[in-house]
View 1 (spheres, rainbow, N blue to C red):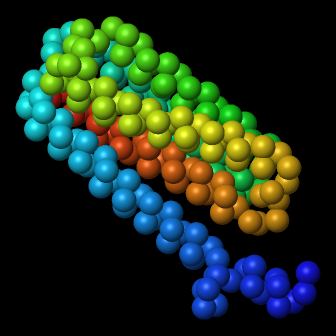
View 2 (view 1 turned 135 degrees about the horizontal axis):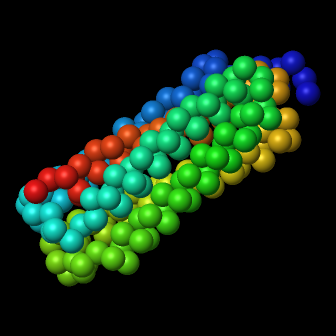
Length: 190
């Protein structure tokens, strides 16, 4: 690769380093997605008010929330390990994060199966819409985590270029933060 091509690869348009463009793009995505999730949160009150049925499982809600928060800690450990060159441990933690994400999704499916309120009910509409949109993001995050696991195994993050793993973990933290807001909206408001 020529020197000019290497400079072009490292820099985006106008000589701005590609990493800055990547970070800016990721933050734009987070802002737009946060607005979407915010609309879902507001719609919960518009559709169902502050009504939360007694049939909603508080135990299941706190359990899946705890699992998701634990997964965020595992993701942090993955990112830190990769940043410090401990790729093996980073890969293990990416895998642990993905498995915990799958357990969370399983909990959401259980919630859907035991919810007494159907989608035709106002609260049911909010529950299925909010958890469905969030579950889609969790599923995407699991795919990203597994992709990062494979890339780390192929040596992608050995040369100090850890942006990919950092971006994946940032996305996972974003999904976790959204749930921190959704949990009280769906389970705790009476």
